[in-house]
Length: 249
Image (cartoon, rainbow, N blue to C red; front, top):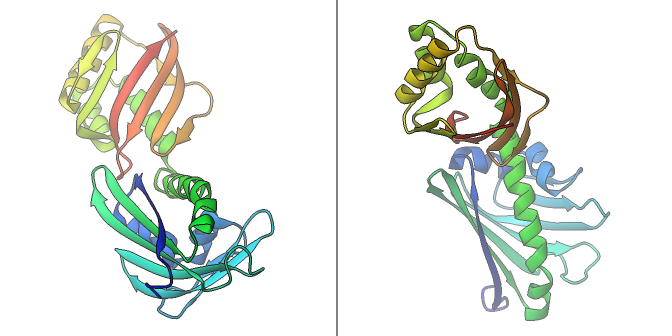
């Protein structure tokens, strides 16, 4: 089959999750359908059926040619209509590589014809974006609660309670910056929050409205006793906060 498919398309994308988490989206039909379309399914074994049901009604199918969790999936690919690729007449190979802060997905799609390959360039660019978002929506499903815990921690007057609260939700090397802070550790954040409370005893801080989330980055409006603003949170693959940038007003 290698000789019959000389024209290749290659893409890669960085996913905000570890390889075993990413690989679940190749072995579970419910997750598979989240990035392909309702009704899509996969049988995660050599020889297993692959079915893709696009939202526009088109259908593609194939067969699992090789699978090695959590590193590699290879399957044949073609459209059930026969155009522009007959079933089984192209091959998709996906390889996962650990790369901070998550997983680098490498995709190689091999075709018999260059013109057909070129027709799929934008399709894979779009499809892998859907994939990255599908994984992120699952990994960071608790993002709103993490944001709320961050804001609440800033109001805790007891230092031990404040330290424990920040430690649960932020990486040890969390970065925080706003007009009054340029911090690079959770300990700095704990002490900075304590100083804020000394100068502004009884200060309040909470989220205002719904968060906006995309692939591990979260925008959250906030309101406080001193004003309001917006924070940009960057989340690590384990769901903890890696960085925060605060904007006032």
